[in-house]
Image (cartoon, rainbow, N blue to C red; front, side, top):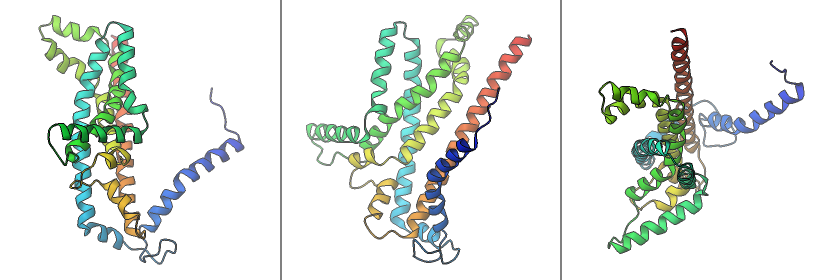
Length: 278
């Protein structure tokens, strides 16, 4: 039975939406300002988007960010999927609970603690093996994979629990090896969870600042760090344009994630309906 919202509840929801999205709308609005003013709108123009495209430092940071986000999300997805399969196959509950508790530490731990601890670890290991400049792309990649792993595992595990465990066994009874049964039966059944984990990892890696700030090297700068360095000077509308592009990118990814989940749920429901009718 559906309950009707009271006028006070509607007003409360409206105020929450305004407080959440009004700053973003203002930012998008002023990114099309024709003047350098960040408070007075002088006319519509795309000059700041054009100026942004001609900023070599920012474009290099965009490329670095995309390379890091794609690499870390792919590695985290492969490792997280394998870890989720292993955790799901554990027989003893206390081992499974202990493993999940350890796995969730990077997700629950404050980012500044994770960033500082990983920076100290990388510097310490670098001194042990004789590397003076230990921080760089490799250290940032390891750090991003580390904090992305729990999200992939938590996206894949529910799909493994929803899957009928007898399906891989039936595939092996029909002649498949365990590896073939995984790729032909298990993998398609959990693909929506893998896709969700991949997109979430990419989004988190794309806009991470704190951990990236502590694990970056002098030769590799990501977009969030570039934006932070820009805020130390006078804020110009090209920064609004940059933030607008980031917001639009993340919004598209979230919409794609939600659509993939809806499609997966409909596909599963149709499959169950066919099995019931048969």
